[in-house]
Length: 287
Image (cartoon, rainbow, N blue to C red; front, side):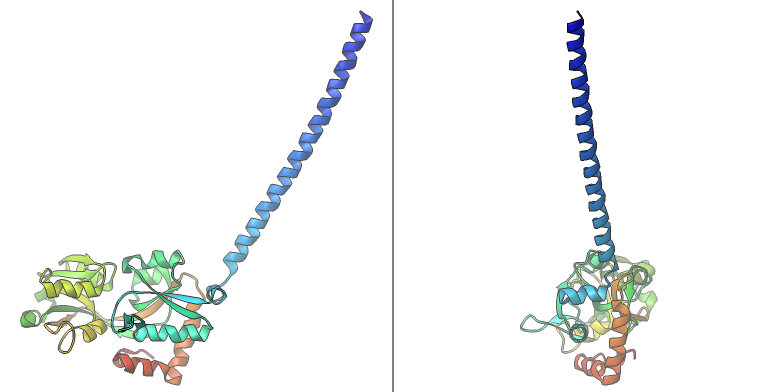
């Protein structure tokens, strides 16, 4: 009986010893794993912090390309016969990219999605005759205004005499670019309207007779409607407001201040005047 008890006791001691050793081993492994996780989390936090602290200017220069969000909007941004993007804004953006030592890339966007495109970093700026509305100013870091503009009513030449005042156009059905200043103006009029993808499409609606009128930028109207244009049977009548164009960057971006310096230098050295004269927008320049 004593031998059996001794044997049993010995076995219990051995089992307890092994359990203790196993427990110590588990504790060490757990501690090492925890330390590793903490180190990984710390590294991730540091990396995120470093990424967040990189300025937009450094980001663009490091990747070597300024990606500019635009729409087809003569005389600001449009394609030449070879498919290259040209226009007052396009040429100015190209010169600005050169000043940064990077290439320029133009990406055609849906205007209503411009803020999403910017915040998602699929583009670096919106440079496309963009009106500095309250919405734009609150969502983007914007440059100083560089051009004056207005929203004007487009109707058929044959009907222009009937629509020379704001009150006279309120009963018309309009086509306007979604998310544009023109859309805001029509909403303020309380008129019926259809939202389309671009200002060019709005002109097509009027030309086809599917809408009575359109509201587009005055600079585009001067280039796109009337004698000698593709819409010779259309004209612009009533001006609905006055506004200013600016370039939009991500909120807090240091590129806005940098562009302001470039615009000031371009006004001084004649570059701004030269490009404006080329595209017939000299009268709209803000210096």
